[in-house]
Length: 450
Image 1 (cartoon, helix red, strand yellow):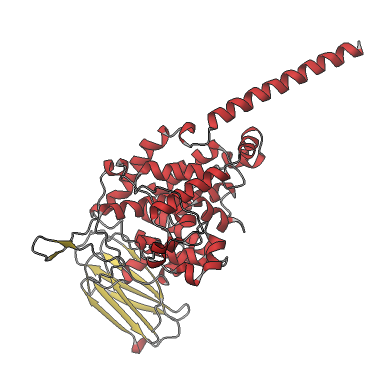
Image 2 (image 1 turned 45 degrees about the vertical axis):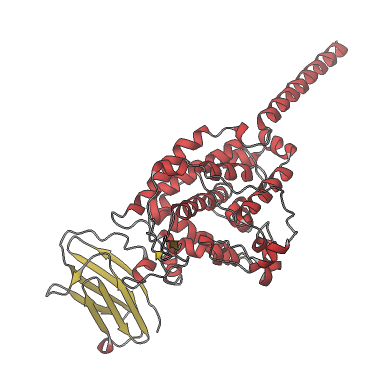
């Protein structure tokens, strides 16, 4: 069966379902309505929707077919007139069966004193203060070589990807990994080891001359700073967006500990930062270098790293934006983080539009599709599930925005770790000395002439 293109709209009293199913037989079409479930079947199309509210068929309901454009329009009465059905644009969530729970991460098993396994509760809420609680990372006595593999590592494959549910890529896609990420053997290194390697690499790649050149004079930076970041395009999903959503499949993500939930939100901030950087530097048009920009600036995508606090993700974003891209400027990086905050304020729909755009950007450039499979596809599905109704999870975006707005203004140049203040001071002294030498030379020339 084929899932048709569809979209939903609503009035105070009705839910309207628009289904594009051309070349079907109206007399063989079946529509079944059962409270919050609607099933449409007209060979070869089949569509099952789980609604966020209850509907019913009455004398006022209707179903029409337009043979010219092959569209069915089904109008159903709301069981409670005036009720607002949230997230009708989140098509992937609507396709998910009622009470369907597909865990992509095993439950944490809590063993009681009597040896009986206890069920852990699903975590879906993070308070504002939680974003600032720094966890104590595992200590790494020695920073491993990016190519070294210990006997212990050979026996154990460390997970990565969305919710740490992937592994084994280095055995099957070693060449592809080398093109899209900085760590080619992620299975062989734990999270703490990947973090240590990343920080070491960033420190070795930072270029004083490049940073100062962009600071003193760079037309591209000046244009990027002047670019108006317009989020109006993040208000409504396009037909192209909805078509992509239909192909993402159905799955549900259940978080059994707060640390995993925090890491997922913080990874989202990291990915959006790299996307917003590319958006600003390309005037919102993206280009052939966009896959590289987005993957390189994100520690999540390039190192399969994760974050445990708001400070960690800010630190990573600011550092990498001053190390890798063509334009490296402190004010530009700050502008980008403010752009991220604006995207987060647009809510699940705005974020989803950005993620779908990344999905498209990576999908057009091999082998970046690996990053889609590891992270972006599942982020696209997950973001549709976090903004529904009055659930606690709907407050998490608001709380992380508040946390960013509190923490980011306090992040200064001296926190980056590249001696930016000293570099700029030295560059200013050199500039002043050069200006003085030029002034003296001009005076000498004038004296010689007269």
